[in-house]
Image 1 (cartoon, each protein chain N blue to C red):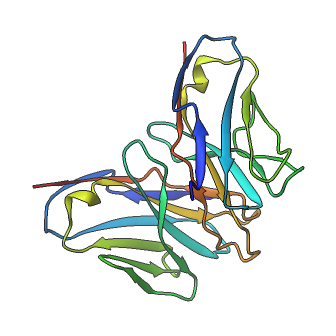
Image 2 (image 1 turned 180 degrees about the vertical axis):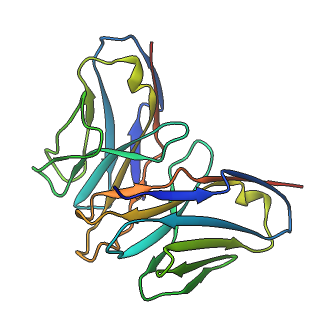
Length: 115
Length: 113
């Protein structure tokens, strides 16, 4: 199985432009997440979704939006990109057991540069 | 605010040698701690999870320990291989729900021949 795929692999974007980062999983996991990873910082949660049709805000949600129309897809949209959104973005999914011990499976990441 | 601190920030060791990575956390109440391995240019992959009742757990050449009293965990790598070169990230769930976890910055390990 492919697990989690992300697209594009990398992108250079002009400030003010919009962009959607795509994420698809084939594990039928209920929960999905978007993180950003910046040098010198741990991964930070942007948005999450517990199940299709629901989304929630993470630690750094400003400037980003998500949707969860179905179980498999969880796109992340930057409506008007700014240079501070330059980062590596990881999508992840998990099958929550309710005990808090579920494993998150990560995609390969999208490297975004906003100029 | 939950904090996860890892040390050292980076480490270079010779192939075949052992090493130990450290993780300190502040979250309370504690439920579990997970170690991830992140190869360069890839997403993190779970190595092991430690629950509050576990002191030691091994996964091949990786052995994790947990001291819930001092809020410390370590990851010991035995007989290192070149493929162990990666960042090792410690992760602890916050008390506000399973979605919210705190990631450490990671320890960047380089194994050289």
